[in-house]
Image (cartoon, rainbow, N blue to C red; front, side, top):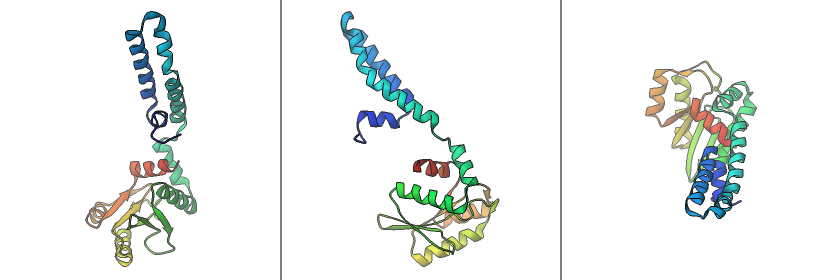
Length: 184
């Protein structure tokens, strides 16, 4: 199915949009067509109704952001790293996993390099020191941006300010859930 066809767009949209479109088709059919043809005209919305049912089924069974974060918190490092790498690849990045050091991933897209640190994703508190190490690795590799991933715990105020001032994006809560769900 072409990605920009009506049915593909409706499958990606909230389920109720398809049902609203079916209602609109039926309303127009009964308003504009003669009485003997109105039902036949309204049946023209049947394929869209089926797509709406498919979208509702998919969305009802899709994991929630809270479930995605909970799953991330229970994964071992290798599973979490593979999940992150797959999500970034899905987003169009070329992903290279790094061994040791402050950065765990090197992400490249359109000539721009981003380093990501995710190994402390389960730590209870996150201070400035891991961010300083990530910043040093960014300078060493010539990266333009950094990502610091955490699935639980909190970032200190000083660490948040340091990240803001040094081109480091904090990926946590909703942003992490969106990243993990995009892989699905």
